[in-house]
Length: 305
Ligand code: HEC
Ligand code: HEC
Image (cartoon, rainbow, N blue to C red):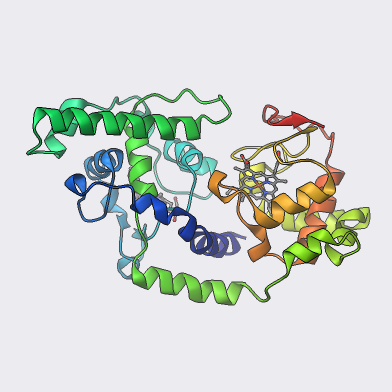
C-alpha cells in the first residue's frame, strides 16, 4: 500500500510537472538564488534553513540515503492545503510518518526586517516593491489553502515555506527516474474521450453495475482515502457521500472527474494510472456510499443535486 502510493505520487509528479512549469517562469532575477524563487519562496528558503530541515533532507535525488529523504522535484507535487496539514502534523497525511510537525511556523509572522536581510542591496523603493510582491503572493496562497473557508490562515512563516517547497524544480536525473517509473506504471494508453462519450462502453457498464462496488472499495482504499477519507467522508478532498458536488454527482460526471482529475486543485488525473475497469469499479463504489452519513464528514462543497 505504502509502496503503491509512493509510485502513484512519483507518477503524479511527472504528470503535474508540466502544469506547474509556469511557477518557475514568474520569477524576478533579483531574488533568484540557486533556483528561480519568487519573493515568498525566498523567504521560505530562509525558513527551511532556520528550521534545519536539511538534517533529514537533500534536494538531490542521488544523495538520498538511509534517513535522508530527497525533496528533489517537489514543486508541483502537492497542493498548498496538503502542505498546510502536513507541516502541522505529518501523520495527518501519512499515519506512518516519522517527520516532526512544525506547528510554531503557523504562529510566526512574516517579518519585513527579516526579509530585508534576505534581499540585501535593495534600495528602500525596491524593498517596498518586493515586500508588496511577497504579501500578494502570500495572499494568493492563502486563498488557495482557504478555498473552502475552513482554515484560519495568517501571514505566517508556514506560507513562505510552502511556497519554497512548491517551487523546487526537478533535476534532470529526477525527471528521467520518474519517466522510467511512469512507463512501468502505465501499462496502456486509453481513449478516454470515446470511453466517456459512449454510454455502452466498459467504463459506463462497470460503473452502472452495483456488483462492482466491492472491487471498487479495494481500489478506493488504495488510492483515494488519503484525501477523501476511509469512508469517503472527505479530508484534503471533498466528502463523496453527500448530495453536494463541485463537478457533478451523476455517474457520468463522477467518471469524468476521476478520469481527468482536477490537477490544479490537487485531484490527480487517474486516467493516466488506472484502467477503465478500475475507474468503473471505483465509481460503482462511490454510488454505493451515497447518503451513508459517515462520522466526521467534511462540510458540503459545491451545489446540491
Ligand atoms: C528528523 C528528520 C526530519 C526533519 C527534521 C524534517 N523532515 Fe521532512 N521528512 C522526514 C521523513 C522521514 C519523511 C518521509 C515521510 C516520513 O516518514 O515522515 C519526510 C517527508 C517530507 C516531505 C514529503 C516528501 C514527499 O516527497 O512526499 C516534505 C515536503 C518534507 N518532509 C519537508 C520538510 C521540511 C520543510 C522540513 C523542515 C521544516 C522537514 N521536512 C524536516 C524527516 C524529516
Ligand atoms: C492527493 C489528494 C487526492 C487524491 C489521492 C484523490 N483525490 Fe479526489 N479530489 C481531491 C481534491 C482536492 C478534490 C477537489 C477538487 C476541486 O476543488 O475542484 C477532489 C475531487 C474529487 C471528486 C469530485 C467531487 C465533487 O464534489 O465533484 C471526485 C469524484 C473524486 N475526487 C474522486 C476521487 C477518487 C475516486 C480518487 C481515487 C482514485 C481520488 N479522488 C483521489 C483530492 C484527491
